[in-house]
Each structure stands twice: as structure tokens, then as C-alpha cells.
Image (cartoon, rainbow, N blue to C red):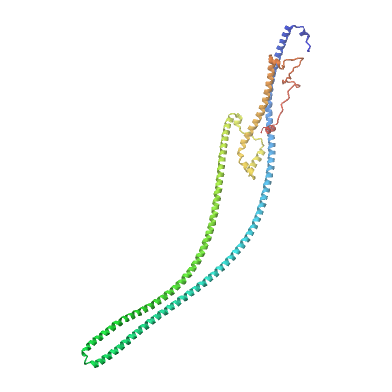
Length: 493
């Protein structure tokens, strides 16, 4: 048990209660003074922290620039190493490609030489086959010429024999007709002469014998004689006319035979000419048909080739059209997404513009921390023509340097604000906790009395460890931990 002071031991209950109330009022006043001191201390500390934060911010900016330069230099060295390795790898790939191409060229030359030898061998074989074919055709041509010559000679002999036979037959017919006509005329003439002689003798005998007796009958006999002469003349006139007609017919037949012989000769000549023309036309037509067949085959092959190319082109165009359609749809979707993102960026830009400070409105981009020589080196390097594909692609994004500067500045500000927000949140929680402890200490109720109370002190000791910032060094709170900006940015980004 705690010992009581002799002063309190001599007091009664009312005095003890009064003494306790006075003591509580004194402690309340002392706590109020301590609270005022704590508020004043916090205000002074806040002002001091603001000054220190401004100084530390400047120091941090300088150190941060130095760290950025070192990080950028290391990054550029790494990029140079990566680019050099990439260049060496590309050179090795090019060398391998050149070796493979040289090997392909050598194989292609060997294949070409082999193909040329096989082609020349095939050409020699074709020439040999063509010569054999020409010899065979020449032999067939000679055989056909001999056959046609034999046929022509045989037909010529047959025609000549037939012509000679017909000529002999016509001559025999003519000779037989002449002989028949001559015999009939000779017989008629002999008959006429014999009859004439007989009649004359008879007439003379009768004339001498009957001149006197038959004077009256002389006229009748003369008339009879004249009548007989007339009858004979009439009867021989038809034969004479027939003879003249046969003679004219014979002359006509002779002329017709001469004409037929001449016509036959002309026909034979025309037949020979026509046969020569037919043979020539057959050769020409065969050659022309062969050329036409070859041209047809070439045209057919060319047509098939063009058809295959056209089908291939159609398939390629169809696939390209499908690919173009897919790419166009993808491009439209990507453009819509980019437009939506651009609209969102513009809206965010308008929203952020309202939150810009006067300094950011006047100087939207921070001043470069590089020296003049370093800026000249950077400008000179940017003027050089890039040799790598990656460097060439980077040239298209040079205009975004200012954007990335501002973006990096915003990111750094955001990281600083997040860090500051975290620290302020922690300070706020600590202050809330202290304020709650203070309010619990100055309040008297069942809830406060049931919990740990900082004003309840027994034997000069309290159950609560006070974390009140004081100026004494032995109870002074530890300084806040300083974190480097590079560590903050690495963890935040």
C-alpha cells in the first residue's frame, strides 16, 4: 500500500475531497498549459519543418538531378552495349546469310551447268531424231515419187495404147468404109457398064434388026432408057450422098481425133502440173498444219499458265483483301480506341489545366540541368544521321521530348505528393491519438476512468508512456528517416 502523507492523514473526508478537487484543478490548469505549450511547439516545429523542407527540396532537386545524370549515363552505356551486341549479332546474321547465299549461288551454278549439259544432250538427241525423221520422210517421198512416176508411166502407156488402138480402129473403119464404098461403086459401075453394053448391043442389034420394024418403038424404048437412067441415077444418088456424108464424117472424125489428142496432151500436162501443185500444197499444208499445231500447243500452254497465274493472283488478291479487311477493321478499332483515349487525355488536360499553378502556366517545362557543353554534345549527336533501325525509329518521337519532360515532372510531383501525403497521414494519426489521449486526460467519466488515464498518477508513475515532443534531449523524438529520391522513384514507378 502507498504511504499517506501526515497532512492528508489529519484531514477528514470533506477536506480530503476538497484537497483532491484543488489538486485536480491545479493539474487541469497545468495540463492546459502543457497543451498550449504543445500547440505552440507544434506550430514552431511546423514552420521549422516547412523551412527545412524547402531547403531539403532544393538539395533533393540537385541530388536528384545528379542521380538522374548518373542513371541516364548508365542507361546510355547499357544501351550502347546492347546496340553494339545487336549490331554484332546483325553482322553475324548478315555474314551467315551471305555465306548461305554464296552456297546457294554455287549450287545454282552447278545445277545450271548440269541442266545445260542435259539440255544440250536432249537437243542433240532431238536433232538426231529430226534427221532420222527427215531421212525417213525423204525415203517415203522418193518412194511415193517413184510410185507416182510408175503410175504415171503406166497410165501414159495405157492412154497411148488406147489412143493408138482407137486410131487403128478408126483407120480400119475408114479403110473398110472406103473399100466398101469402092467395091459398091465398082460393082455398080461394072453393072452399069455391063448393062450399058448389053443394052447398047441389044439396042444396036435391035436397032439394026428392028430399025425398020421398030422405028415406032424407038421413042418408047428411048423413054424407057431415059427412065432407067433416071432410076439408076436416083438409086445411086442416095449412095453417093451417103458416101459424101461418110467422107465428111471421116474428116470430121479425123479432126476430132486430132483435137482429142491435143486435148489429151493438154490434160496430161495439166494433170502433171496439178499433181505437182497438189504435192506442193500437201507439203505446204502439212508444214502449215505442223506450225499451227505447235502454235496451238504453245498457246494452250500459255493459256494454262496465264489461267494458273490468274487463279493464283485471284487467290492472292482474295487473301490480301481478307487480310486488308481484317487489318482495316483492326485499324478502325485501334483508331477509335486512340480517339477515345485522345478525348480522355484532352478532358484530363482541361481538368489538369485548372489545377496548374502560376509557375506551371508560365514555365510548363523545367529548365534542363545539363551544362552548355553537354547540351551542345546532345544537339550535335541528334543532328547526326542514325545508322541503326532503332535509332531511326527514335527520330520519329523526338517531338515528344517536351511531353515526356512534363510527364516525368508530373510523375515526380505525384511521387513526392504521395510520400508527403503518407507522412502527413501518419502525423495526423499520431496527432489524433495524442489529442484523444489529451481529451481523455481532461475528461472525467465512467469510460475514461475505466481505461488507462494519463492524469492518474500513483507514486509519481503513470501507466501510459507519454510521447509528447519536448525540447529536452533525453526525451526528444527521433528525427524522421530520409529516403533517397531514386529509391522513391524506383518503388513508385
